[in-house]
Length: 188
Picture 1 (cartoon, rainbow, N blue to C red):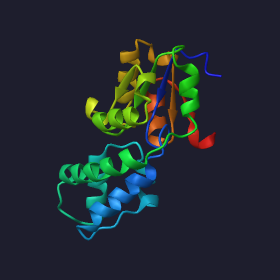
Picture 2: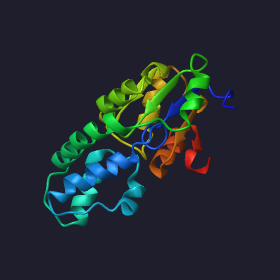
Picture 3: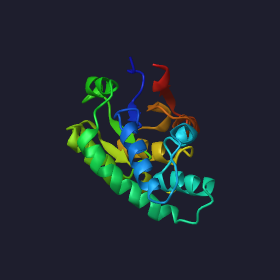
Picture 4: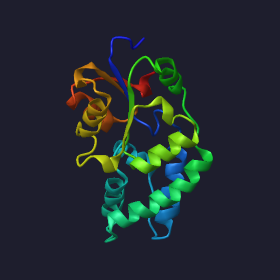
């Protein structure tokens, strides 16, 4: 089905792994300590963004002066425990298994590198991928193409020969900016 591509790149949260419920729960828990609310529907447009950017947006919407990097660290710590206990793969993992050993594959995620590796290891999926690029591995995040361009580079595949699997608008914009084909998994 994807044989025309030399490399496959997968977003992680909401694409390969069902992490969204844990992320929402962690945001509610952390923000509640500061008298703030997390509006999942309002934040959906930021899916694929690094945690500090989501934190910055939430802080600004509440008129708070909290440090977005510190708030992001708190949220990451809270979600780490939840995810390691609760995360499950989504059906797209079958594409990964089908192309294992046939095409180089990478994960390009807005999550921190260590979190991505921990989750993939926990589910015994890390061995399927030739590379993992997290938010802390690039300077410019989705919708900029840097995450996916780094994935292509690490796989040794030209960007125009890659397909990206994404569930977020920022990720699709990043794939387009990288000159890559994409599959919007929300439409599948």
